[in-house]
Length: 138
Image (cartoon, rainbow, N blue to C red; front, side, top):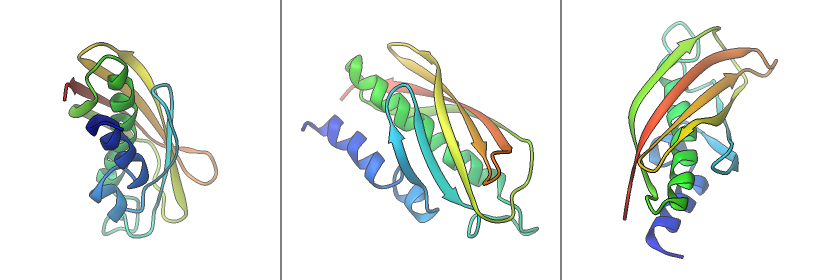
């Protein structure tokens, strides 16, 4: 396995890196077409006891970056660097686990954009985010 492939594998096995690991992110599915991961609400809340909006952004950026990196391998640009993220927080979550599903909106040679839908244990949408990554070569 080359360095780029090792980097993508490392993203998958660590929950997207040190921050994702610290936040309890677990990836269950990863391909350029769809990335799925979960994150516990407990430990990732703001002072009012609700899931922190920044935590939702970390989950979204993790999932979108993994998808972008996997797509980037197909165009010899295996490193994905987030350059833009936006998120709309629809509903609060106080407990349980949230699940994010990232799907591509655009996959080019130098940039990839993913939409990430985050839902709670009841399947209600908590957040919708969009992450754009610059694809870089080794």
